[in-house]
Structure formats: structure tokens, C-alpha cells
Length: 208
Length: 110
Image 1: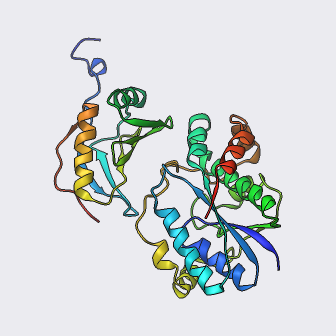
Image 2: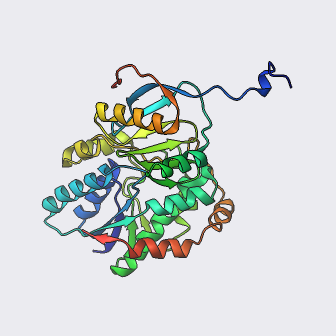
Image 3: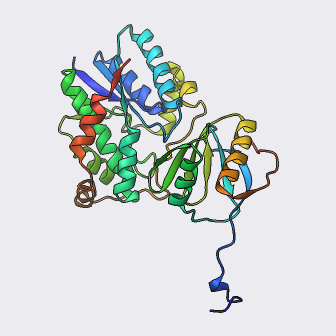
């Protein structure tokens, strides 16, 4: 079985996606992009609690990298078009995950994304975001609807953790782009020094 | 323009009357009585002069009162506390620092 890097948000979907990968016998390294101060402490606390449950269930160590992402958000908000902020944010998340995958000898990336669950989860946005990386991306939940995902989350005991109160990401614009053009995204991203941002974030990541 | 011409008057001051739990229940948000366009650079200078640490993200400020509060250009304040009394006290403190008006009814939950 392979070794993958999983982006964990603290939401309902990512622990379910992780559960499916672990059930198949894959080794997984978790990555949490820490959005403070645009959120509160709750997303990280939820990820830690999700991992406690899944580590115990599968009797498997799941290392967690916590990557500081708030300073990236500040840079993006200062320098780029707000409407595509979520896509640019995702590109940095994917890049960070890929950088950690290379460090961890992992060969693929994993996400809890499902098509169309939120306005910004469109095919064009996914393509614009994932164009930033070259490792294959596994989406175990892509064909499931929300009710099916929630049912599994309840069964494995992660649902009540995910739905605890928390501050939503304050960096999300009022009207996020739903149909992005890759060329426009690349032009926006060129306004910042992507490599320097990435290098700084991954260097400051902590392993828990 | 004459002094009676509405176009020559400064915009009416923003007032805060609402403090309520935010949608995910993680904090309290204060909303202005109308859509505002806050002068964030000026408020940043004011808050820093008062000794507060401010992160300037251009379209919003994040301020350590404490608690931490997000101030958007549109006038929304989000206080990162789940304690309504702490949020209420923080709002009063923030309005005082910024010279804004607010007279709240008791905080509203959801």
C-alpha cells in the first residue's frame, strides 16, 4: 500500500476521507493548514481530536504537520484580487502538502473535497487549484453526497467533533469566484513571491 | 454645493445596535445599522496609537484587544469569544477606541 499526505481541515469531510484511506491500509501523513488569525483555535483542536479517534481505531501513527497559513492569507489579501482568494489559498495548501509529501516519501495527496458541496468547489476551481502541484490527488468522497458523508462521520465518531462551534474562515470573500480561468489565476498569483511564501510556511511547520 | 445640499454633508456616523452569535457559533459579531465603508488605515493608526497589536490585511484588520477581533471594511466586527458578556465589553471598548456609537440591547443568541 502507498503513503499519502492528507489535508485535514477540521470539517466533516476530511476525517471521513482519511478513514477510507486507512481502511484500505494506506499510510497517511496529515497536514493542517493553520489559518489563524482568520479562524480561532477550533479547527486545529478538531483535527487533533479527529486524529486521536482514527489513530486508536486503526492502531496506526498518523503524523500531523501544522503549517502556519495566516501570513500567506495576509499577503494574498493585500496583493491579489479578493474574488479568487480561495483558489489562491488552495494552491498554497496543495503546494505545502506536496512539499511535505516529498519530505515524507509520500507519493500521492488526499483531500475530502466533493464536487459542488460549496459554491467554490467547481471543476474549474479544482483544476485551477490543483494545477499548482504534480503529485496525483486522491478524492475518496468525490461521488458521495453530504448525507452519505455525514452518515459515515457519525458512524466513526468524528461528526460531533466537526460540528462543534468555531469561527469560520474570515478570509473567505463575500462573493468567491465559482468559474475561474487558470490564466487569470496565474496572473494574480504572479503578484506575490509564491516560492518565498511556500518556503517560509513549510519551514515554520510543526509536527505533532 | 451649499451646506444644505446633501452631497456636501459628511456621511452619517455608523451606529452599532446588534451583537449576536455568528453562524458557526464560534464568536460574536457586531453589525452596523447600515452598510458602512470604514476607513481602515485610519482605524489602524488609532488602534496602534492606543497600544493594540493590529494585523492589516487591507480589507480587514485583526486586532488584539483582547479578545481578538476582526474589523471588516463593511463595518462588521467579529469577536473571537463565546462569552456574550466578554463580547459586549469588548465591543464597548472598541467603539470607544474608534469613536463610534453603539447602544446595545442584550446580546442575542441563535
